Structures are given as structure tokens and as C-alpha cells.
Amino acid sequence: MRAVLQRVTSAGVTVDGKRVAEIGPGLMILLGVGQADAEQTCRVLASKVARLRIFEDDQGKMNRSLLDTGGSALVVSQFTLYGDTRKGLRPSFTLACEPKRAEELYLRFASELGYLGVPVKTGKFAARMDVDLVNNGPVTILLDSEENG
Image (tube, rainbow, N blue to C red; front, side):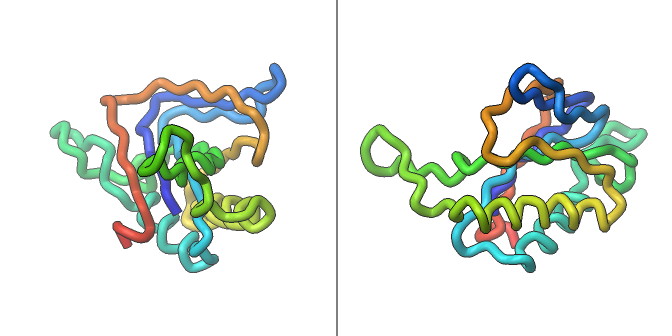
């Protein structure tokens, strides 16, 4: 799995002109599911996301987690995170998980965050979405389950 985490003061998703999800302070999570991912990947990555210390403490140091702050998460499926541009000018998505399984694991990841106590909202899987956010910091972190364990 690949996840782009953006620390936000607010974020939202609109599909076909209708607002389908929004959060206040927390994390905007763009999530890509790869062919090698499984339920265990969801648990491990969700735990890391919930506990990652990227929120400021009283001294201004990034020393607090999403769980510490009581922030929310907005999880949006983003298969293009598996775009391979090493050859040519058109990305190849052969490493991305097939849609049915990807949706299952995307929802499992969101559920795992919820089990940990994080309030979670999601976008609409496989839909064309308009995503808006106010990146706080700005703080943006890339997690890759194959590299970051």
C-alpha cells in the first residue's frame, strides 16, 4: 500500500456536485492498493498512520499523533499512486491491485483506522472525485508498506 498523508485543518470530497465527506482537523489520506497487499498490510499501515507523530505539541515539535490529537481521517482511494513512469511518458498501472480486491482492502484500511479510535470518512471508490483540503504546515508524508514497514 502507498499512502500520501496530508495534515489538514479541513478536507472534503465532492462527487457529481454532491458533498460526500468532510472532516475538520486531521489527516487527508490518499491510499493506493498494490497487488501484493493483504489484510495484514491494512492493519500495519493503519496502526502506523494513527500513531505517526506529525502533529505539533505545545512546544511546536511534531510529537503528537492523530490519536493524541483526536483528529479525523478522510481516506480517498488513489490507484494512480501505483503509476510507474520509469519507461515512456504514459504511466503504467500494472502494479495496482485489481478493482474488486482494491476496494475491499481500501475499506478494510478505513475500518482498521476506525477500530483504533480514529473518526474516519471516505471518498467514493472508483468515482471521479473533487478533493479539497487545507494542508496545515504544510505537512505531507509518503508511506509505502513495502519500504516503511
